[in-house]
Image (cartoon, rainbow, N blue to C red):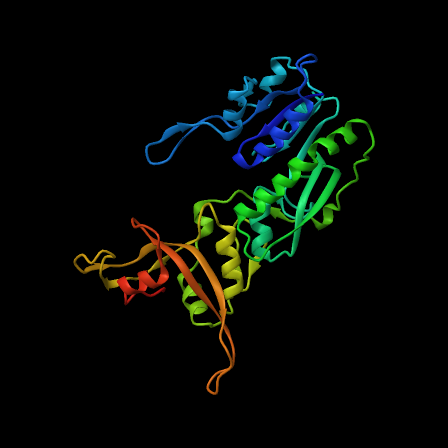
Length: 334
């Protein structure tokens, strides 16, 4: 079987390894015969040209690499099927039709729920107890094609986008070979999605990880805000801002772009005991947090509040919330 793989990030590599190990046969020139990935881009403060993980994987194995989906078609590379996982672009019809068995997309949600670029983050934020992976035969529309297979995965209470996504793609790697073999042999009949139940996500930007300081301040005190909190990268979706939804949001933003807010520092001392400086309106990353339930007392009913565990002030190293409060005793969110 000859396969062209469309993908970009590191977490899809287990799928590549699994397919190559099972289908590579030098005698028949089978296995992964080409990869299509995003082109190298400048990254980091020094803007160093950086290659994608899929690009690096293919380079080590001397597999042809293409940066546009139609380029391998123009090169007349023959393949039976395409496998797509977190590629990042819509595949044109002319490329889809190049494959005898089409292109299968490995999507980390239970489609039609959470179509688009950020399904794992949306699943965590919304409080889904169960998510999963859907393998579809792609068409010209976004995550719209018929379902070849689905499997479910429980969302753990401590899951971040990184841990949940890694688990989903590791599981996909385990089932990919048997699933693809059955599909090619005609043992699986794809079924249409329930399109009327579709929900949509978009690509996350750094600005989407912003949390209004008023929401932080209220949640630290265990107070509720009536105003809905709109999640920018999920279409037509808002949350009630509570300690629980905040913690889910913070976890969903790990490892990137990391949730952040603004903190008013007033007059505070630097963490290493340097001279006190008047600092205001600094950006603060929220790296970790949890919900604390307070007990019933004579004076107050039980309630829940947000507890920050680890933060990072703009231009500083990560510190515990306790260290931060000791350094900036007048810091407030407003």
